[in-house]
Length: 392
Image (tube, rainbow, N blue to C red; front, side, top):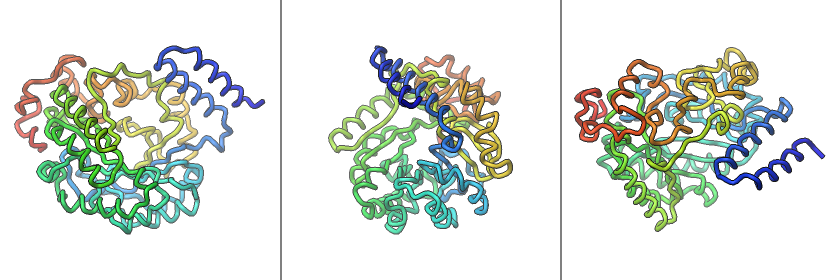
């Protein structure tokens, strides 16, 4: 009997003994780690390989931190990722920019498909402005998931927040794309809504928009604040109002057969990232210049440069090996994923949290369990500045 088979039998036995969902979750996470460590090295490449192709975007969204970046990957560097591409179960092509503006996207796809023949391989996030029936045909049968970030259900809110976009034109593009997909590929599409103080009233209607566009799933993600002057936009200032909108959205989802996922205040207890976090075993995020991160919540910390050092030197290197034993990065201690939703840290970016300005944020909200800032809720916060509510 193989060691892995023995482990699986032992796991099933232990799962019958534990009594709480938290214990079951922690046990499954530990078993996942043991399975990974028992693999031979050639099977330890990441299940999910994220390759950032560009930081350029055709929109200037209020919530985006990267308006100033206009970089793209050197296409020749794709060849340096041949081995992890072959082994990946999912390949993400989304970075800080809009993937469909990258001029050699078709060449990237052709190269990936020549090495990895798995169906349902690609993970893509897009603002939807460049979707079309032709792109649907190019991606047919190859999507693991496609996330369309619209963040609004009305022209007024969309045109205000998604600067440079047009609500009617974008939703038309999404509709053409969805109509060209077969039923299986449609089930892999999600409409994403990044919620902040000034757009939460659109959340229920966003579910109805998804139904009209034949998108089966809506994900509501909180805006993770990346600038001190955006403090007023935090959901921490409108907890009850946000929860009500999520409840209405879930009700609409049940009526329209649209799956709705969203975190809520006053419901979470948090998780231990040292046990629950699988990112160091499963995923790597490679920016356009080759800097590697274990996840998209780790801030500016780099595990190394895969284009300069080589992929294996980074993925099997000492920084990653240490992270697999203990989540030692500063961002891990206040992770946006595993810290409870009511905690202030959950709502602020790992790029902002290490800065001196963040201490002002913590003082501003007094404590993780505070009820938010009354001035922020009304748009007049002195810490954030007079133009904060406008997203300036």
